[in-house]
Length: 500
Image (cartoon, rainbow, N blue to C red; front, side, top):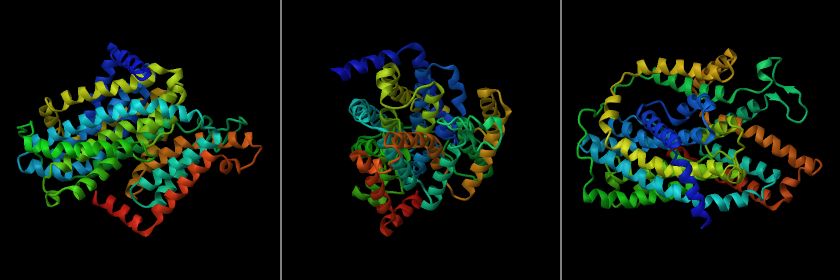
């Protein structure tokens, strides 16, 4: 009964006219940036963070959440029609979805992606609502030592699940942690690593870092690419799948939903990992494994269900523990911080309208996305014909305006440009920037909790190992590192990222 009363409060909040409007705007923008290759949800959310200053906290988070899971829907459109994933989690969808389009079944592939995503989104939101209260109660038992150990586990998870070299991922984490130290020491009030630059006494702007790494760098990288791809943008017909399609896609969608729901809650998980894992699972379970890579409908249904489920359950650790599990959740932490909201279990009690309103909005958003994606497919198809050389300069201008408007300071624009150059260099060196942003967000939180734990234990570091929950989390971290260091696991990990 308590859950039903919470959901009633959530729907009352989410169904208000202005929140419905922002949910629609978020879903529309998410679909749009999912359709446009090169503009992922991390880039768009980073660009829109300055706008959230003027919005109520609930409306801002509803809109940003809509952008995230909306991009999972929209990314499949480009992957199927152009063989160019609009979002990282749609990489796998392109393998079989594009082959279906080449065989004249683009409509069935798009419908499969939309229906699978809708099923997964509804189930994942239900799981989020069910897990919220129990996990929040567990979180209240966490002390500073437990929070520090949990964040260490989260960072190690991000390293393990990052694509590319483990050494590079660890380096990015350490760089992010170092950047988080810049600013004024909370305990002593002394400026550190600011190099006598007044603008750095409050630390490096989170918006500048995020927009530089995921906005400027992505745009420069995409401008540099000049690929010509076969595009199926003339006619998309027969959107309704056949009965045989349904018999094949529904079990795959259900398996993808379960897998994505679980993986989305893991540190470093989320939509991308879920879609990769689902495709591998479907290929191993299918009696028609030879069709994979040549237009297997299970290769579209499973990953699309998994990526949407993973996107929505990644909110579980953020809302209940205050720990971002991936880069988009790190950006959501930034949005909550802008509105003076401390992510964690206290949000449920101190701001229940925000907590349950956000969860309820996900059900509404999934229904909106079905309407936006399938009936309006012709609009998205036409959008694919817009030359990107016209879009990118406009996006850069809006990025600069957004960064400047936060503090009315040109220094932030220069910082953004610097991180844009740095982000581009990282991409050229095959270094994923997501661990850096996670380290940057979690670094100050880790330092604060570690110093608080040491203060309570009078400087005794063994407090991290004598408290059972903290010790368990550190052991889990060590086990995770040992497992990924095994030659067989390491080789499998590298093969999985290379295949995708």
